[in-house]
Length: 191
Image 1 (cartoon, rainbow, N blue to C red):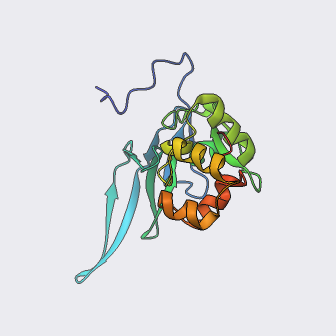
Image 2 (image 1 turned 30 degrees about the horizontal axis):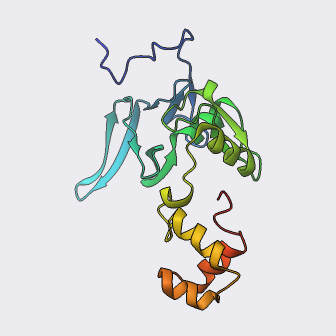
């Protein structure tokens, strides 16, 4: 009986197709639904009693969700571990090599949907446009890097012609560069 993790995605009428992970052929495979599995293999290991070989059974692996909400997985080859985004593995195996300067983009804007049919390569500008379209772009005070609020930005812009940057920065608890960016509209352009 298949566990929930091993069951194919029932939302799609397509069948699940497995292909080798690029660079890890014979060790790992990735599916068209965005799942990763290890393959059966013989592992050799040194110990103080000599070199031992044992059989490691393949299994569907459980990725973790990184701090940005994307699924990531650790692959191992020759005792070296490396972390990969699952979307990048799926795209490399099902779409082909990623062109220079392009990113893996999710068509529906959901970072956990790593189905091959949901992925494409696009520029950073195209990825940014997707974030705006899907409403996943954090702007203004929603951003973790924001030091000012929308109200402060409006006040700084209205007072910018009558006061110096230093006075505005001190009054709002911001740096001079932040105030200059707000007044010149190099930051907070959406307001």
